[in-house]
Length: 98
Image 1: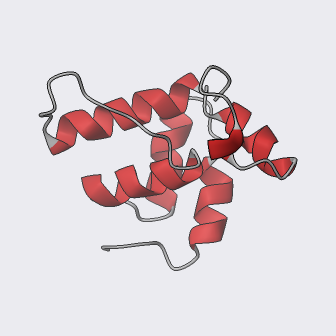
Image 2 (image 1 turned 120 degrees about the vertical axis):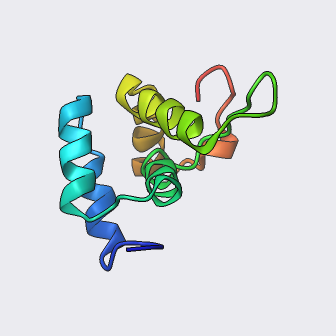
């Protein structure tokens, strides 16, 4: 499969419930997300498309995937979910709080 799952909204909602690496990997498999770039894209959508940077500017796709999974599992993005529920766009929130 390439691109987005057939029901991206369901995939995003289900993946957002994951809190462990095991549950995340299981959910990605359930939604047939297997290619690195599609997993990265989906996880970024789950996390409300966070802004990230790399200090050296050059990372492999596999390193990007691992970093994205680690950021997801860390869960700091979940604060953006509350802002979204309150109708506050993430770009309106101070970087110290996002």
